[in-house]
Length: 123
Image (cartoon, rainbow, N blue to C red):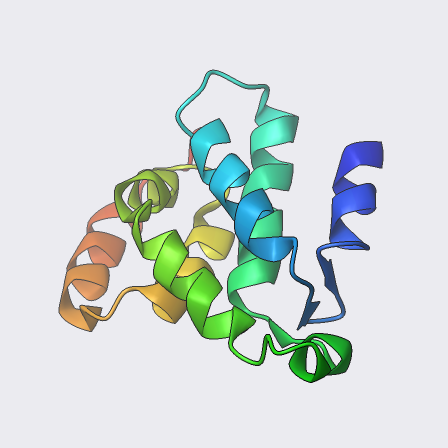
């Protein structure tokens, strides 16, 4: 949790993104390909959610980075299958929120969402 808060308060602060968001997002997506603890996976998915929901901080806009939000969402699309896999877990709500933000195919999300609803969410 200490690492979570270090990242949460450096990469994204109350929905405001900083330039480190893109490289951190790449590492977070890569972490989803690994066997990590349930708690770590919870934190990774939560951080991804925070990042893809964010927009550039005012300071970043002034530095010439006004489009961090769209760039992060575009990058997250590269890990779309990893995030769809999270629909069948206890992280379902965060996964749904992430997918709503990044997947342009709303029909696919609706179909897959309905296929996991009603099933108990594993860890």
